Every structure is written in structure tokens, then in C-alpha cells.
Length: 174
Image 1 (spheres, rainbow, N blue to C red):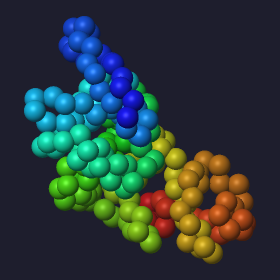
Image 2 (image 1 turned 180 degrees about the vertical axis):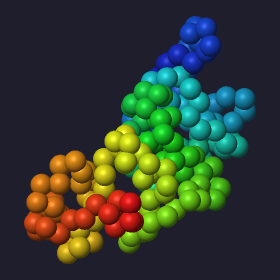
Image 3 (image 1 turned 180 degrees about the horizontal axis):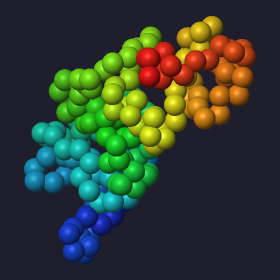
């Protein structure tokens, strides 16, 4: 583990320098605070996730387990990006795995397909243009994104068939 110093986030912007350790997830560092080990978001200086981990090894193992479950979260992004509506659910689920609690689940799932699920909030973001619209291939069942607004010949990048991809909005009846 590489030792690193970074500024903690404070309301006045003058947070103290703290020492943490990079442990394999870019953008996150582990450090001891208040008798327990926690994960900090280095870019912003905020405590990203904390729990009752008494050893650094235990804390790092929990973070790596959560990262295995959600490897697409880019922790090098700013705190504003990570707390945006688009990332909120993934970050909450990452925290649940990190803490070893029941995973956070969206309670308003309205459409499912082969392990993927979309909520009312997901559909609202797609309709408003805040996120790309996903598509599902009728040939290989692959979920493709973005399907819209660039639905040229409904082409599937996975099986390379033309005319096989349909928007999840259409499939869900929107």
C-alpha cells in the first residue's frame, strides 16, 4: 500500500492534511479515524464509507468485495458526479456491500430482463434525456446502451445483427 496525504473536506475549505493508504481502487484511500478504519474519497476529501472495521486489512477486504460487485463506479470522478442521481443507487449498493448489510434495492422496479432491472426513476431519467436509453437485443438478449437517440438500424454491437434491438422504453410500454 502506498502512503498518501490529502486534505479533508471542511465547510470552510481549510481541512487538515491526513494520511491514508492507496489500496487498489483508484480514487479511494483507507485511513484510521475515531478508532475504526474507513474509506475516503481522495478527490473530495470526504469519508466515502465507514463501518466498524477494526483493522485496515478488514476494511480493505470489504472495499475490494464491494468493488468486485460494482466495478463500474469510477471513484476518481468528483463528489458531485458520484452523488448525482445517475450514480446514487450504485453508491448506496456499494456501501451496503462494504458494510456487509443487505444490499440496497430499488423498491419500485417495474421492468426486468435477464438480471437487469429498471425503476420508474430510471425510465424518467431516460425520458428526460439525462441518461442514454438502453436497448435489448431480441437475438442474443444483450442489453445495449445507448440505444437511443442513435438507433441506426437497431444494430446490436454484441451479435452484430441489424434490426434486432428494441428500446427498453418500448418493451416496458412507455
